[in-house]
Amino acid sequence: MIYKEVAYILFIGHFLGDYYFQTDKMANKQNPKTLLKHSLVYMGTLFLVIYPLFHDRILFLTVFLIGISHSIIDFAKYFYKKHKEVSDSQTVLLYIFDQILHLAIIAISASILLINQTNINYNARIENIFYSLNLYPEVIFSWLLILLVIFKPASITIRIVLNHFEPPIKREENMGVSNAGALIGIFERLIILLMLYAGQFTAIGFVLTAKSVARYNKISEDPQFAEYYLLGTLLSSLIIIISYYLIF
Image (tube, rainbow, N blue to C red; front, top):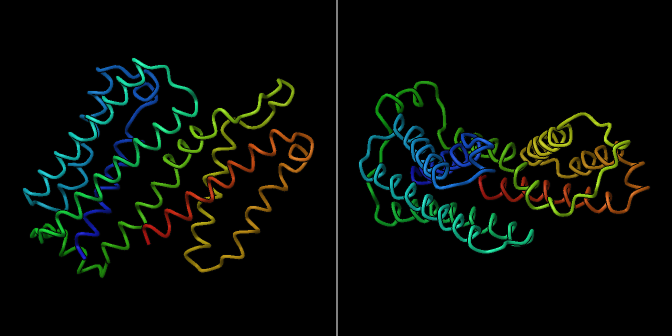
């Protein structure tokens, strides 16, 4: 069903614009100028992923409205945090609520197109390419979407949610490879994704066990780190499992 494919493409545009094309400066040092820049980049990204595939005016209008709503939500969150002291737990809740709103608006927009039976068709050239190469757009877009999710969005979400749980690291303990933890998490989610797709659910346990063996000494010696490690592993696994069943 083409509406499902449209929804996938809109979600792809969202994750690209809100995570991959948003610089650390734009995310960490927010002000009206950086928010406006982010809004333009976000809307431009949505148009860039839609335009090569479709030439429907109603879809372009939908993209414009999604971009406007995204900007309104981001500015509302910015002014709320500026005028009110926000705790660590409230920061997490704001982040989660912010993303739920963005994703819900995209889902609702795609649903409205479906309910109204809006006539949406692929660009003739793109459709010919899919047909000649025997490609299934829904499969391609679903895989692209979930791969985008398990990399940067999942890593950032885990970092924000677990930020205030992170135990203090002593200087002599800080001997690991820089950013290795995030890279391990990405490979962990990628392997779990492949195991889910292959239906090898029991193999997921071996993946998590192998990860735990590498940190066994620190887990056994530091209860605070053990709890932080367990939370991170469970959250990482939860994100990929939920994403898999929602997308596939």
